[in-house]
Length: 117
Image (cartoon, rainbow, N blue to C red; front, side):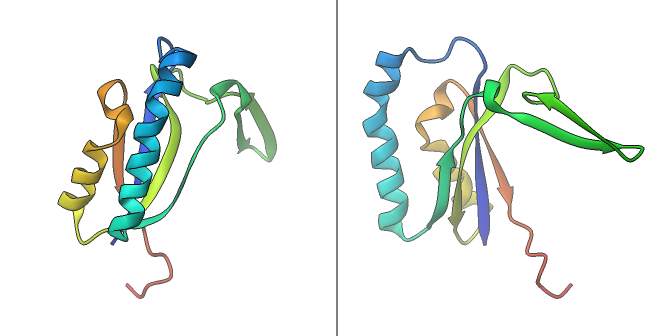
C-alpha cells in the first residue's frame, strides 16, 4: 500500500543554515535507506512558504493568496511517497525522518481512485 509521508517543519525557529548543512547527510542516508529497502517511490522538498500561492474559486471568481491560506506554526516542507505493507510499517519509516524531532510527519494512505470500489 502506498503512503505519503508529509513533512511539516516550524515556520519560525528552524535550523540555521549551518545546522541544516550538518543535518543533510542524515537526510541522504534516510533516503538511501528507503531506496535500499525497495519502498521508495518518490519525494521532494518544497520551496519556502513565501513562494507559495493558494488558488481558490468562489462564485465564479478566481481568488489568489500569497502563501498558504491558513496561519500555522508548522508548514508543509516536503514529502516522501513509500510503498509498504501496512500503516504500522509506514509509521516506523516516518519515525526515522530527521525532521521528526522539531516538526511532524503526517502519514497518509494514498487513495487509488482508479481501483474498483
